[in-house]
Image (cartoon, rainbow, N blue to C red; front, side, top):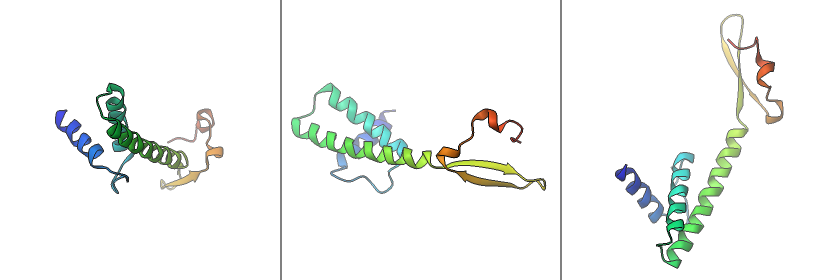
Length: 106
């Protein structure tokens, strides 16, 4: 676990103002949790705390965008009589309730 934490710490410390191109939601969330811990323990200098805070805001915005993208990607799988399965994207306002899907699942 120490190796994971140090790798995460180096990512947080090396990021000056922009997020890495290969940033994932999970990585952003882990970095955000690490920043929160550092800011809460109060051992960082004022300058470092400000830098961490600003980077944390970028991570927060990144996570919010990723969550909004995920919310808009609901799929309904339908099985045809020939056995083929097709996926249909549903807008958020058309997502069926679980009880509406009874009898339609395979």
